[in-house]
Length: 286
Image (cartoon, rainbow, N blue to C red; front, side):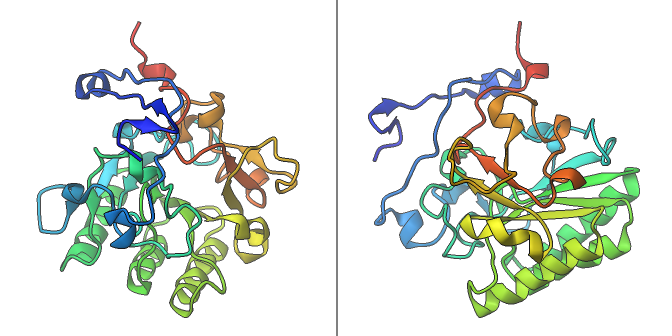
């Protein structure tokens, strides 16, 4: 495995200038699988250790969604329309359960630009809670993506989000977790906390269960998410493909299916754990 080839095919690149002007390489780029002896796999951490923020800085933990190509600035459709979008990015693998099915092929393997925050940094959770409070006081409606990378690492972290939902009735959460019932005693407790959040705030909390276990996640507080070909006949009945990958939507802001009530008991299917198949239509250069 090299950084410039995937299955013998040269990988695409996007320059800093391209990103700044909203121009993206539109060719599909599967996520890079890491070998079992890769330092990121052996050390249960990111492939890009220099991107991790482990000390107090001026960098915000909550990142504006307009800087995330798949998220967008503000939700335009559905029940959450008008919500200002933010995202949280943690450290892949380091904050994830080791039984995650995407352990070696995490799309974080492609994301060398992302700033990954360490939730174990002293004061990190206090900083995050303050940022969430400020966002909810500033905007009429807020939607936060959990997590671009990473997962719920501790019960204290999960309780922070549960407390935020109780405190702010304009806060909406969406995202995915690889935690599952029976995964581990530690993971069970956090998974139950997430399920309670989904059940207590069904209109504002939509955390989906990822992996093949997710097909039965409907009875555990919500829908699922899988990385699998949508044409696979063995797929979960009623599953739907990610619209950003099929090109039917620019991203989460113009789709809304993952948190829509109509699709909440279904499973969203991603064709690959790599980048979307096209750039944002609204940002494409002439």
